[in-house]
Amino acid sequence: MARRGAPTATKGAAIVVLMFVQSFCAAFFVGDLVSDFLEEPNSEWLQPHFMLEVLANLGLVAGIVFEGAYLLRLLRRQAHAERALSVASGALQEVMEAYFEEWHLTPSEADVASFSIKGCSIAEIAELRGSAEATVKTHLNAIYRKAGVSGRGDLVNLLIEEILGTPLIEKETGERRKAG
Image (cartoon, rainbow, N blue to C red; front, side, top):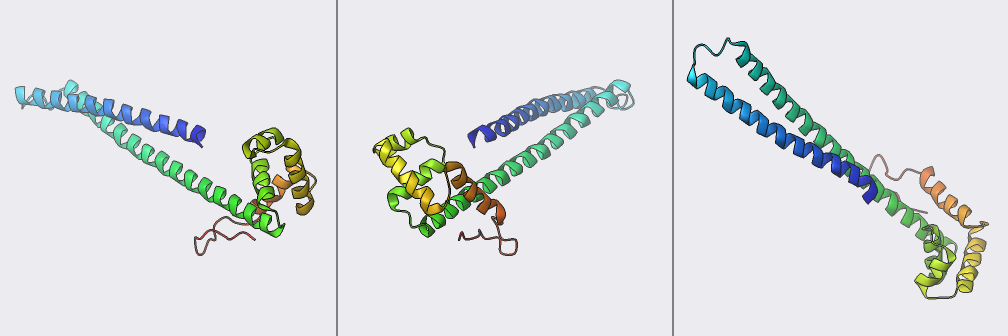
């Protein structure tokens, strides 16, 4: 998730910096316009130079407003994506737990299955659990037998299809669906 959020955060920071620079420039131009007007209040209004400064200032202000709206849109989109990822992550955990219960996995088998689904190798699982690789292989064989699959790919596919086959959020209630 950090890899996906970083470009949006970088874009947001760049837009904020640009908005500050533009705000400084706009303030400078407004100060210059006021100064010019105070020096010669009657003759400045019709000068092309004065009109050009007014248009440039209006362009800067419009740019600041546009960038602010764009930044808000980026932040809302990022928040929505993070919420969706959180829902999907929670749904996967719920689906996994429901299947583990349905398959009558032991706590050790459920632990090994979770690590396997997360992509850990047999050696990594053995190290994380403090057990021998042969023990992990025995647990994996029991898991595959109980789940009725032939390997890790089928196990992961079964869980992903369960999530993709049903909506994560009920449209009417807005609540997360229950696995099982």
